[in-house]
Image (cartoon, rainbow, N blue to C red; front, side, top):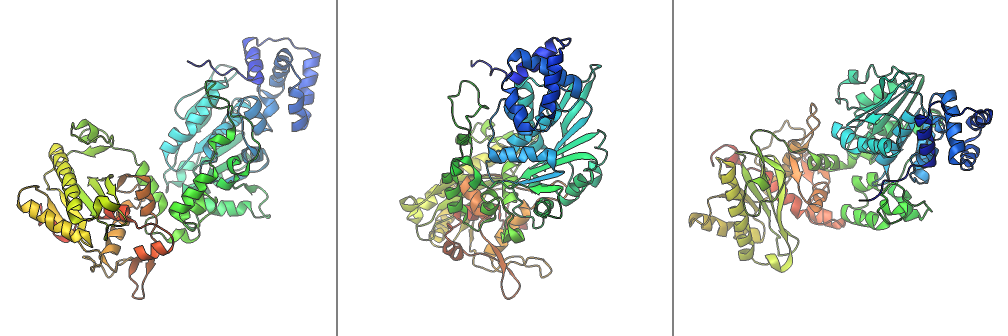
Length: 588
C-alpha cells in the first residue's frame, strides 16, 4: 500500500498551530504576518517560500489572530491556495478562472470536454471554505441533476478536505467546520433545484459572504439561473462552469456568457476553455501532476487533458458542424439548437439514466441465462423486442438491437463477408430471436417477442426465411417486415411535426420517447448502447418539405456530409417501433 501523500508546508504549519493553540507569540511573527497580509500576491507568495516550518507556524498563528482563519494569507489568491495548501498543480486557464472569482461577481466558464472544469470547481469550494472565518462564508453548489452534485463535484471537495487536512469534515454533500465554541457550522453544501421551482433558490443568503458554484451550467433552467442571479447581492460571487448547451437555444448560461463579453457589464466576466486550449495540444509548459497517489510514476499534468487525437476523432465521427463538436471541442454555443432530430443531451441523459431498483426489478446477469451478462435492471414481465437493420447490399452494417421494457441494448453488428447473403443474415437473427425468447420466458412476459426487420435489400429475403422458420416451429416470435419508404401509419393533421414517410415517423416516435418530461427532467428510454450508436442517434438533421411535413435527413445526404450510414441508430428505431397490428393488440 502506498504511503500517504506528505502535507504541504502550509498544511504542516497549520496543523502545528492547531496542536499548540497557545503557540509562541512574538513581535517578529506579528510583524511578518501583518506585512504579508498587505503585500501584493506575487511578493507574498515569494516571501512564504523563504520561511522554514517553524517560522511559518508562528506566522500562521498570527494570521489566524488577525483574520480569523489559518489560511487568511490565501484569501485573495485561490490559485496560490490550490498550489501552496492543497499541494496540487493547475494550468494557466484554470488559474485564470479561480483568480477571477475574488474580482468579479459572476465568472462564466463555457468549457470543452475534459479540461478539468469540475476538478477546478471543487478546489474553489475548498479555497472559499478554508480561507474565510467560520460562519462568515457560505458556499452553495448546484447542478442540473442531484447525482451530478453528489457523484461529480462533491467527491473532489471531500478529497481536498481530507487529503490536505483542512478543518472540519465532509459527508456526502456537506462540509462542516467547528467554530470557537466547538459547534459544527455548515460552510458548504450541495443541492439541486427543480427546473420550475423558483422558490427553491430563496432563503439561501444568510451569511456575510456567499459563493455559488454552478456545475454543468449548460443545463440549468432559466428560472433557476435567474433565481441564482437574484442572490448575488452584497459580498456574493458566482462561478458557473460547464459545457455549452447543445440543444437549448438562448439558454440562461448562453445569455450570461454573452453578458460576460459585454463591456457595459463589468461585474461579469466570461472565460471560455476550448479543448484546443489543453496543454496537451498547445504544448504549454505545465507542472508535474500532484493529484495522483504517490505510487503513480511522476508525470506531466498534461497527460490528464485531451490531446489532438481526441479532437480529430470527435470531428471525424460527428462532423465539424455537429452541436457536439461546436460545444465540446470549441466551447461555443450552437445556434438554433443544432436542428437535430434527437438532441445530443437527450441521448446523453438516456445513457446516464439510473437503473430502477426494488421489487419487480432484476439485473439481466442475475437471471442465470447464457449470454446475459449485462448489469442493468429490467422489469419482470416486460416485453422483449428486436430491431434489425440489414445492410442493403452487403455494405454498411448489419445491426441488431434489443429493447426490454424501457431499456435498449446492443446485441450485434457486422459488415462485409459476415452478412453478404440472406442465409447468413437470417441465421444470425434467429440466434438473437432464441436468446430473446429465453429472456422473455425468464421474465414471465406474456407477450411474444416482436422482431422488426428492415425489408430493403437482403432484409426482404431474411424476413421470408424467418417467417417460414416460424411456421416450421423453429421459433415462436412474430416477424414484421418494415418498409421505411412507405407512408406513415399514423398522421395527425394537427400535430406540430407530421412525418412524411415511415422512416420519419420512426425517428419522430423515438424522439418523443426520449424527450425529457418537464416534471421529472428525464425521458422514457434508457440507453445501454455503444458509442457509435449514440453518435448516430444525434447525427441526422431535421427539416421540412414543401408540404410542411417533417423530413429526416436521408442516408445519402448524410454521406454527402461525410457521415456514416446510421445503421445502428435505425436498428434502435426498429426495436422501439411497433407496427399497427401490434399496437392495437391484434398480435400478442
